[in-house]
Length: 90
Image (cartoon, rainbow, N blue to C red; front, top):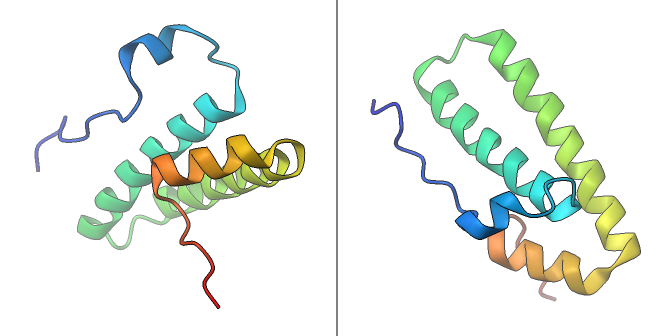
């Protein structure tokens, strides 16, 4: 496995500005989640990493719930950009 196989999806100019924004936090949590899921595919019995993954998933879920309540336009843009959730179809 290549150690640096994950390329950050955040543009360089975005990293330096406004690191405390909800979008930036969701970006970083998504990168951590993707890295941990690939780690857990190789190491299925790494229970501490599974616990950390669950904690990060909960944090991201709370941030996304907050963003969906405060600003649905930014929420939908972020979801589309990260390709996290599937759109609901009836």
